[in-house]
Amino acid sequence: MGAPKVADLAVGLTTSIGTLPHADPEEAVEFVLRCHPQLPATPQLPNRSPLERRLPQAAWGIAGVSVQPDGSLSIEHADLDREAPYSDPTFTGEPFVTLRTFLRAIAEREGPAKFQLTGPVTLGVALTSAGVASDVAFALSGTVVRSRARSLLNLLAEQAPGVSPVVFVDEPSLLACLEPDFPIGVEDALDLVSTVLATLETGAITALRCSPRGGMNNTVDWPLVLQTGPAVLAVPLRTQASLVAAASSIAEFLDNGGRLAWGAVPTEGPVGSSAGLLWRQLSSVWCELVQGGCEVSRLRLQALVTPAGGLGRHSIEQAEVVLGLVDDLARRLYDQATGLRLSVGA
Image: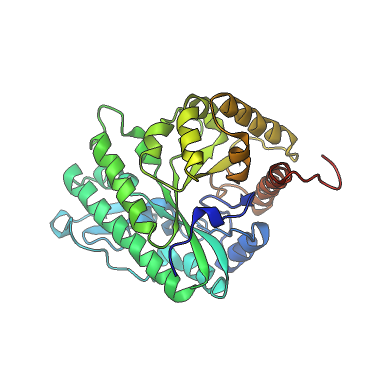
């Protein structure tokens, strides 16, 4: 079977992003299968273990890097080898308990499912912050993330052969690569990410998430991010100004078949219980993008809907409300995109 194609994704799919508040893997897996059954996402459960956070999962198994129980990293410099593979290619370690639970649940599934990997730039920055020389840190992170990407594809082919993987590479640190004190050059950073995406596209639909941290600068250089070549791009709605400024690049991405995963429901601050305002905000961004050259039909037909970020700091009840709003937006999107009318309401 060849790699799944982004065109095979249905209109108006929903999924979750990052962490969930559960502590029990079985309950978390049941939650995602119920809340977004068409594109269920691998849960990450930091409330079960800090090792299920982004960086502990990324650094697990690297020779010379010890992941502490609280998720922090300690370095044995003499043991670092920038060419060495990591030691857990079958994801048997403690950070992947929930991943293994998810795989058991979808073993007989036919259709798409979402997975995530921490990107090489973000891992390289973390290793540099832990005291590794930048040339070693980024060479090592590139090797490890590419190897982990291949291992994930092999694991899925073995344990869930009917699943069409959609793999999000989580790269928040890529947004800082234009800063003058960034430890590697812009082209090197882009190459690290694009190489991982190229590795994944042999067996998965590739996706990229480069969301700025909440409460910080919401400016994103989307044309730069798009140079890495994802099939799906996660776009938080709060980056509206940057998206509109990049309308021509977004239009080209859509014209080439790309999909936008709209982080349209905020995960920080009050959310409310109605999707009406969120729908108006999403529609407003679309209107501005159309004025900038995007085709309205592509914006609607090539859209997914997600929360803006992870839900690990919410209660389970709050998380369900957020995903309910995501589902409401997706229903409105589907109705508008296909020319249907809801039988009740508007």
